[in-house]
Length: 68
Image 1: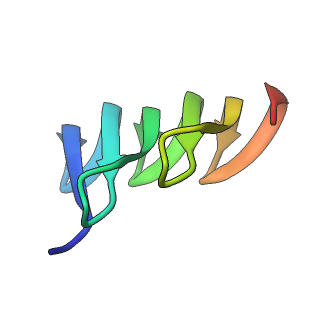
Image 2: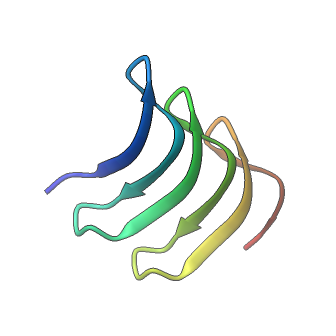
Image 3: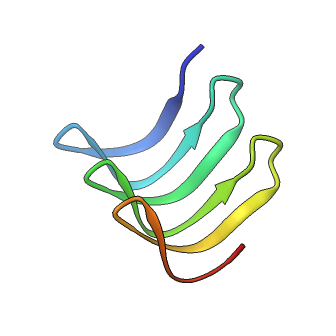
């Protein structure tokens, strides 16, 4: 019953492409990571599976171009 990550790691951090899930197994984020944070292109989802934001990320925050 905890949050889960499936994807690439580098030096113990989420790095590269990956998917982050909530404890019920619903996808919350899918995209690129660097140093354990969302960095690059990605899609954030509401727990019901509806897209919340699709676009660019920097250091774990929405950044640049995207759609909400």
